[in-house]
Figure 1 (cartoon, rainbow over the protein chains, first blue to last red):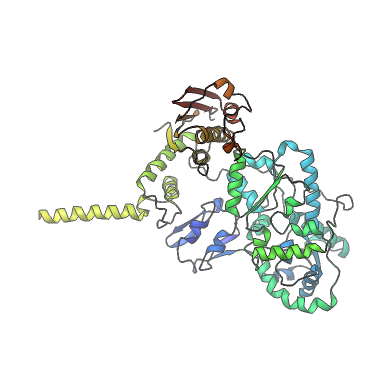
Figure 2 (figure 1 turned 90 degrees about the horizontal axis):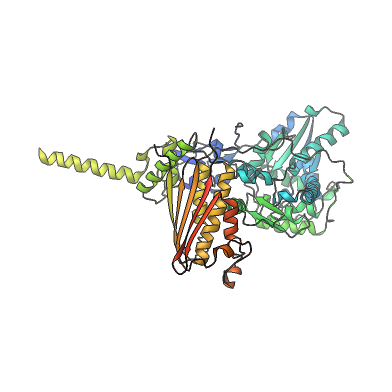
Length: 427
Length: 144
């Protein structure tokens, strides 16, 4: 099993030990222990739901400070299409890109450009690999990680092509090296990310050996720095944007699938919906589909937890921006495409296994069932686990005890006090 | 030491919103227990088909799943109209589902054929006017 990296972490001093995050976590990766939330690394898929729900802002995502730009001689900003949806009244993408250069980046490189290439590669893959239908998109790292730990039967359906951002990083670096003559390590390729999952994807990539991204900034942080620069850029906008309708569309749910020129697809967004689709897919309930686009965040990447704007508003803005653009500006035959295929096999990681072997598991599962019978079934969360069932599993895994259930504890105390009063009466 | 675990579920008829609850629950447990993904797939699909059949055709019934290290046995017992011609019902595409059910996307006539395809042993006992009992087995290759 590989090393697990998580970009979501807890600010312990802010955590009140309430049960909001344990209830919301889609993989039940969080428990409250000793009054503080604790994330089980192996179960976490970095979806960011706990960051969204925590009323005390105790959950945060790891990302780099803009200071990271100073570490390099030449820095390139990678911009996601979702970024363009953050700004009110934006009618030209070039304003954002020009402002990024004013902010200190030496160059900008649009992820949307590579998204158009990935769209073409996907169309080709679908045509050549009918036996893999329905093919599942792999642009959302949270979805890929979820499938890797929970849906082993679907791994074979994953689209084995690099995510646009990874491809963009490779090509941005090449371009920078060619234009500046600088060695690779002097060039910083910095992604402005809508979500913590992309941070994870850089630190521990799935499907590729190494990511070419050197740093990841949060969209919400860059947003505030960029606004004044945007105002100053309006009179001298550089012509920098090279993406079309297809590329920009990737920023919202349905954009990736819509670019495949088939109606035979499904696009689901929001982690709970994604899980439902994967569950049904595993039971082969919709085999006739060609492609399945899944985004962990509601609305797609525009709904990322590091964005600032309401995802649906951002989606409308993208739609408006796309209107005036050509369908696509980047094509396989014109661009020299570096190998975009996955180079590392994705293997099932059975992190949830309850026993060491089947016999052990049967025993443990029997015990779980017995415990569940005794628990009140209120799923109150007072024990620190999200449901009675998960407490039972924790007990069997040896990380919790029966007395953690306040109802069982109460019964125990009642029994004790009864016995005490009986003793008292005897005297 | 237990060498098997028995899970029990009740299935109501005509409740499509809940159809698949038993198979999802079994699937989740088998995953936790670390069964081979292919085994889980076979169990989940054949049990789901059986469960849906109970919802569509029967007046309700029970599902018992017996999980042991070498096999997973599913016993589906329902009260209902029974199957008049089992041989015919086993044919792909043959269905007696009413139009109402077909309009929901079910009733393609693949239920029993899929159960046969995804299980290692399928036994059907049915009495017309009384009900049907299905025994579905999926064998687990011996663990190293």
